[in-house]
Length: 165
Image (cartoon, rainbow, N blue to C red):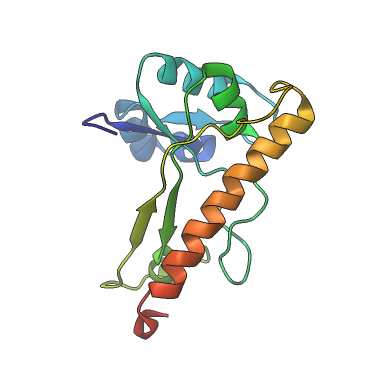
């Protein structure tokens, strides 16, 4: 990210909170109107990438629901952005956050547990594809990103201290 502030895509509901929304907008985060098909979030993300900004996306579009916390099938936004802007994808895996905060709320908050991150090398998820813009290519590129993220997550999971799990 080379000194750039990251911009995250975050669900619109977070922006609807008066305090949190002010903070998110002030930090330049990008609201996503989930389930509407509204292209505004990807348009804003593409514009930011073209300006040389760093955009972080959780490709699944939600908190992982798999019982083993492995990546779920991703939505196609990350591949569509890579296709539209020509910007490579830099995969970043996170492991341990599920030990700190569960989706069911406050009673599951556990302090003092490590959260590990691992970045993989940047890559073009469309490399070797003849028809980059087809629906099939976009899905395959998305699946390629998910595959890389799964490898990174599996590596982190294998090395994560068992005392925290």
